[in-house]
Image 1 (cartoon, rainbow, N blue to C red):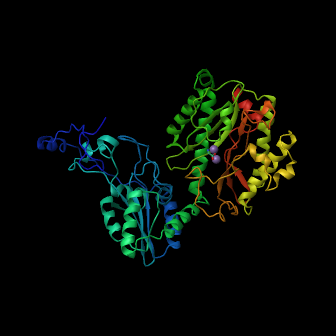
Image 2 (image 1 turned 90 degrees about the horizontal axis):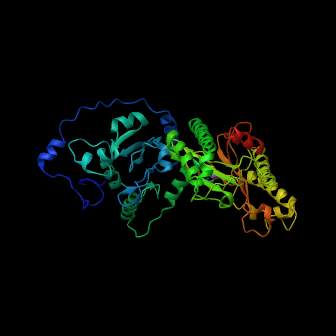
Image 3 (image 1 turned 180 degrees about the vertical axis):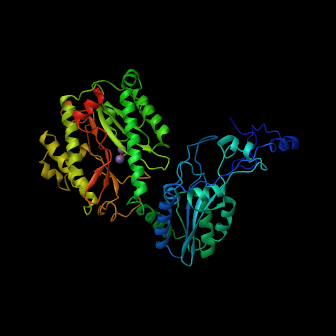
Length: 492
Ligand code: GLY
Ligand code: MN
Ligand code: MN
């Protein structure tokens, strides 16, 4: 399908256009449409939380104009875009998730007492334009109807304005304007051009932009009540996806690309329950489990092997779970599989046991590594003792787990990634933080340092953890974790 015509589109007119251009046609297609009442909705639940986040941001940036674009749709291949997803900082500050209109921009305009926020977006086009039938990128006949300014203003509790009016914001850009770079390249280029003019120089200082991006990342380190509830829902939906995969095991093992069926089954649940998956599903059977981000998922799922499933459902609010279970395809772990699995579980449990407010984030990883070092030493895999291996200059055990144990989790699967080290890796845990605990052991199929029985075994157990006032809650504890419980789950 391509567009009949493209008179409003950012793309050049199609050389395949078959649009009738006669005035008769234009008059006809513009007429005889029923009135559409536009009832303003009550503010969505997250609106007041997003407003509080904007206030927190405003207080950090007195006198600065802050521009937070949602980002444009991204082309996948000719005439075909990736599914649209708004920039995470934009979603966080507006509460607009899977239904955000591509190309929108949030502007915080400085005032005497703080900032006034306005959301610019391309509102529904009228029947007096040809956009609705002739524009394949954004026309109602092609991609669906967009909401009105009044509707979104009520829904999100924000001032709204037509995207056309954003041009005047660009006109007023000066040295006191900051933008989230990378959210929308065109807008960033326009702002840079204006700031160069305003400063009358040829090189631009963008440290302020980087600070803004960093601060927006840090603003997400502690989740509010709405976000915590979304995380619970994302985990609950993800559990259903894991259940679906297990229920499909007969078909999965019968198919030569069973990993694709695992991905498809899980992703079907993700689309049904929320927006999509929060990251490409890792369906890694047998030695593929030793590839940390195995997303090709084109292998068979063979009884006797393990399958590592790392998957998370992203809700319409864009909050995502990030959960891994490693399942014995035939229903029972072999003796060596169980040994490795339970070692990883011990590492996860040890790390979880120390989580509480006041702990340093990186201590979680250190705690898990004590178990990983002890177990690999006990099995005779290390050239030194566990204690020696744990010395920073040795770390032999890390050959079998090269990744970290934890990352913050939320609207991005790797959330808060621009936060300063002082607040992230070296940061102190606070109630409301949500992160993963995900130790693993991966014995590559050609690793000559391990006995043959270990080769090709990869295990990861990943849970989503909430720091509470008194300790921690494992949000994903309801998804079976121990070897016995996993076997019972598969048998059921
Ligand atoms: N799913 C990617 C990760 O666990 O970090
Ligand atoms: Mn993770
Ligand atoms: Mn994961």
